[in-house]
Length: 87
Image 1 (tube, rainbow, N blue to C red):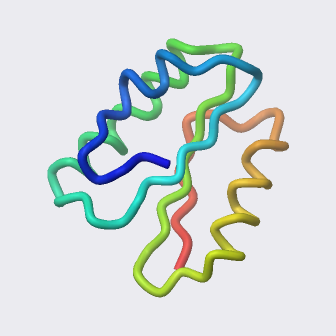
Image 2: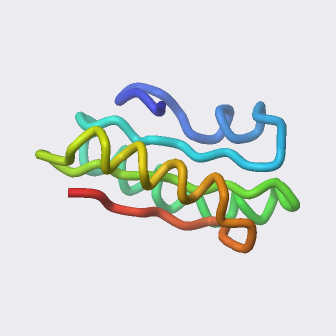
Image 3: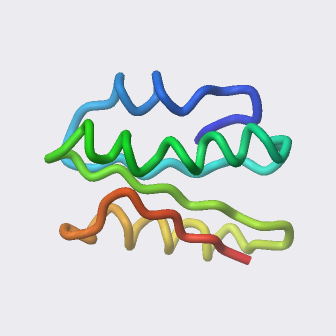
């Protein structure tokens, strides 16, 4: 989970494994959210062959839907640098 005050860059660069799916927590200001979303595709390229994706829950998103989206992205072997907005 990427908390409102966290920076996405060290989170991605410090990760290991085949895939990283980041859930971007609600509460980020608009600029911080825009920066995190803009950083995701270049970080996915940098970290290849690791797959790096994100889930962005909107207000009212059901936790089960966020979990399903996360599970989907973790198994989508040809998907990287993508953001799924839920809610």
